[in-house]
Length: 447
Image (cartoon, rainbow, N blue to C red; front, side, top):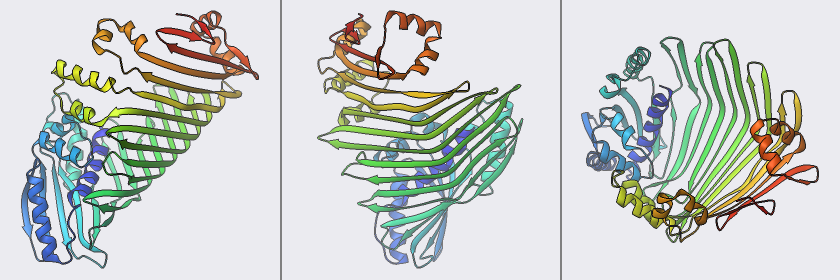
């Protein structure tokens, strides 16, 4: 149910941003010509326009999700992913659109978008239990009252936009009263060559309260998206969250999770049709409590890189029928033949607290390379053939205190007895390498 609520809001944001991203009209009549053109394009890509009313300075219509297959392709062309399953679930969804022309000194065009009703496929889903059905009915009633509304203003050159999501505080009475709150959601961005060139978003607070059973809150959310190259895949995305707090009860047990200062970025680049992606995540502090048992991680860092992904092959894989096993295998083999490299430059936790004991944490680095000579058919016939097709190197460094705790687990105890770690500067070190089908740990072959 939570996914559905946030999905609709996200879908509205995507729809409004990509809905009016072309043209540079200066006066109302020129804007109307452009809007007519955009509506024609929208109708050719899986949407239906209903109840259109055109006045001198404003107009209204209803946007209906009609053809899931066409809609999925439309969003892909604009750089936004939507699965065919989600599109089919949203078939029949109606979104009201109110337009105003030359609303103020900034806006050549202003738009309010709001879902009017849920698709009947969701309301009448036989797999829903009574609680889900009650939630759906209440949500549908709230939609008809414009409970979820996005407002966007476009400047006179249609080269930039700004907007907000109307503050939300709605309560749903199901088995437990559930209250959803979203406050201070704003966004702004720029448009270049009919594409979103940059997008900044901020949300002051998101909260979901379900009595004592579950309380979730996120504060000070920020994100920034920048198109950095010629394709929609050349992009940089950064985000930050001030705090995430989760508290709840399960039967007689209480649990909580509190995360502070989360920061991350995701950068993608395409060179000669080969894509590379770099991901970084930092969490200043993560504290957990489960039935009175406390633990805490301080300064968690994770990074992941992948390169050698052929975009043309990936696009073909996106469109291939999953039932067509021969074509799927052919494309996967073509992808492997390019040689794929993955890397974890850093995964570490500086400090740990577990069962009242404070200690240094751990670090891990790893690399993973798929040989261009890898044969998918051979791997499918004999999974152990994959050992000859990949090369990996991994280094794990554990503090002595952490190693002692891990070794108390019987399974880890057996492994520690069979494979002794190195002792370096008061820490336990494992260096693991898989090469040419052989597994080597700390310089000694084990397989």
